[in-house]
Length: 150
Image 1 (cartoon, rainbow, N blue to C red):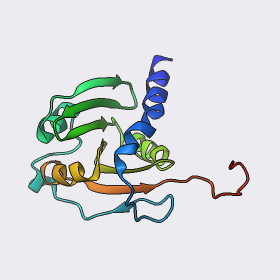
Image 2 (image 1 turned 135 degrees about the horizontal axis):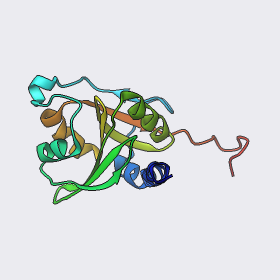
Image 3 (image 1 turned 90 degrees about the vertical axis):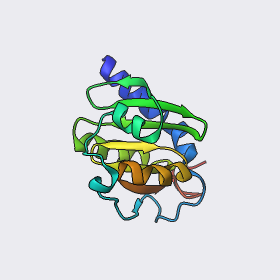
Image 4 (image 1 turned 135 degrees about the vertical axis):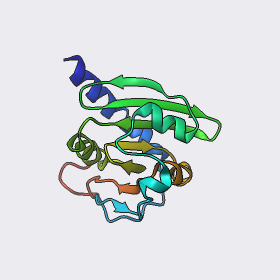
C-alpha cells in the first residue's frame, strides 16, 4: 500500500514539475518529440544510472523524496533552478511514467530507465553531461466544447 501511495504521490506532483517545461512545445498534441541523443561515451555515463550519480553529474546532491518498487525520485535545489531526477528499475516503468506525464505539458531529459524534469535551459546544459533525449510533451487536454470539457 505504501508503494502505491508513493507512486500516486509522485504522479500527483507531476503537474508541479511539468510547469517547469515552458511554453514552446512544438510536438504534435500528445506526441513527444525527441532531439538527437548524445552518446553515453560522450556523457561518461553508463545507463541506467542512480539518482545520486545523475545528481552529481548535474551539480547537486539530491534529496530522495520517493523510494518505491516502481521508481526512485530525488529533488535538486540549485542556484540555476530546481529539478527532479527519477530512476526506474525497469524500462516499462519509465514508459508508463512518460505516458502519464503526456497528460501535462512539459519538457524532460530521458535516458535508459531515468528522467530529469527541469526547465528546458537546464536540460540542454545537462544533456552533454548525462546523455539522453530531450522530450517535449504537449499535453492532452480536451478541446473546447468536447465531451467532458468545461
